[in-house]
Length: 137
Image (cartoon, rainbow, N blue to C red; front, side, top):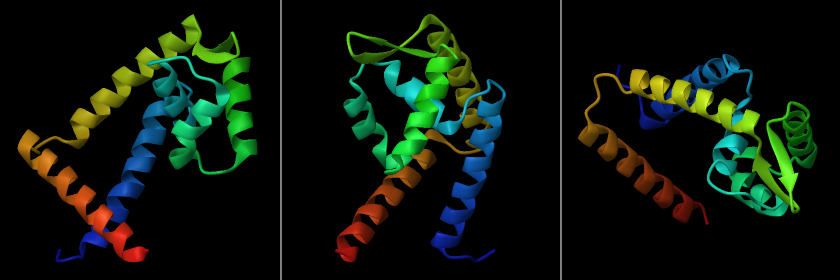
């Protein structure tokens, strides 16, 4: 199939979205919840800091952010300590379960692709993205 790169990028993006949603559903997490757990696994954060880190993924919909965070607090996954968001023990367990599943899925997705091939693909896509952003200005 001789399709342009945009076709393959959109097709891959759509397939990755479905695959990640299906993977995370196994541990009853949404993608945004996974991103939050993944971010808070490294450090506690003020709510504003978390907003800044996750804005590229979440967009500017504050109601969505509030619903997702409220759900995570209600499920006991995150808590507030000294005005900073942090993972609870339950949240850390959920993070580790999801991380294991996501890593397994990544291995499956990259089956038949060498480390050098993967690195080259990422490098090319990064450069093309930067070029496209520069040209769009």
